[in-house]
Length: 326
Ligand code: SF4
Image (tube, rainbow, N blue to C red):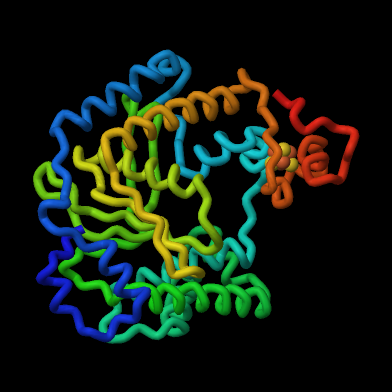
């Protein structure tokens, strides 16, 4: 990110320690900004396309294989759950709407003139999203008053926490919320896509300066690191220069989990993405039987009622050996 020490020193001295910590994390001195080889982008694309070249005849650019961070995360977790969620009709609910409303409200707050009020941002977000033509707009218009109140309360908590933890973002830091990322492989047969919660800064030549941030509730998970490495990879395929840093920011704890983006990080993201793309394709066309991998998250799985391995893992069916699923 392009917060220089000069800019930092010009900030009003009214930041709380959590905000100061964010500012310290995001700032970088010029000699801390890595310079990447201009051939990196082509090299990463070559590696991905060579790994997946045999799938090309089975894929149609008119009906491409979309790879999102969620799809990658689920297919590398429990494949049986991935298939169950994929085949389940999507329905909006208060917990799902909460995230979208909060993200919209944070987006408004970043660009709001003056000191943004969390609840005002949430109400503005609710009004704008209700005008949308997607499923969320319909749900917000037709949901009950209690559901709407629940969404408003939950989103307000998230926005208030963000405003408490993050310093006011200057226009010179190039803040972008809900930034779309997309890269195409094998002539558009495979599409890597994502949307970053917040990014700050932009690259200069081959020098990495951008910071990509995912806002999280709850605690740390190694899957969050993988999600951000995937975003760093797409960003590199787009621009040729990776972000300087990625960070999951845990709003409840007011703490960041940063990771510097290196070529090694990107190469490991290539392998995980290629491996996941192959599994996603094979599961989609039915040439792979989904493997169940029980974990604590079985508790929230839509397939739990029919899944012996999951129920056994949770202690509800002692007749099933949870390790006998490969
Ligand atoms: S209950 Fe657990 S093991 Fe079974 S499909 Fe769901 S996540 Fe996988």
